[in-house]
Amino acid sequence: MTDAPVLVLPRAAIPPDWRPRKGAVPLAWNELAHYLDRYRPAFWLPRPQAEIDRRWKQAIPYVLVSDPQNRLAAYRRRGGERRLHGYWSLGLGGHVERLDQRPKPSATLRACARRELLEELGVQPKRLRFLGVINEEQSHVGEVHWGLVFHARLDHRLEDSPELGLLHWIRPQALRLPLECWSRLALELLHPRKLATADNPSPLAAQSSHHSEDEHP
Image (cartoon, rainbow, N blue to C red; front, top):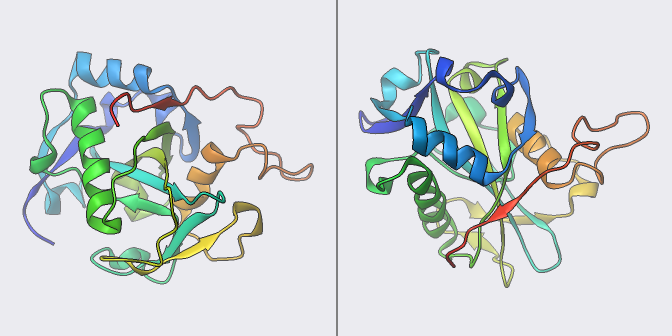
């Protein structure tokens, strides 16, 4: 882990409704962007400090990627975050870095999401659709991270990733993999009704989710 600064928000500056103890919150991009750009609670902190100090939440763009048949890209965790090794993930993304910085915080977050997709997949989707936010406070990883969930649809399926290795393309309804917590929460935003059952209803099934798309391809 380097000492490079990452984008963080004071925990107290994130509205309580947007950081449940464990949950997914559908949210309109315009609402989030208005809050971040108006109050500008985000600033830069050395990553080693941000990883251990729960007064801060590292903002993490977390992108679900699907192919033309609506299958989601999945990969086994490896790399720098050892606490997640052994789990499978559906989310691509990472920490917001200085090279992502734009005049507005909301634009900075989108720039990070697009950079991470280019680095990890080698492609740039035409549109990024924002779904909402995810949060969990039950693990050391979750306590210091806050996820912003996007969805990108590719024109074709990729077999592997320059950074992640072999990609597996799966249908959400047929998941049997040991997913990391954030992936399960993100799925609730993408398919709240399809994943709900009579015995285990999704808490989001009855809520309307105002998704928004990037205006600039």
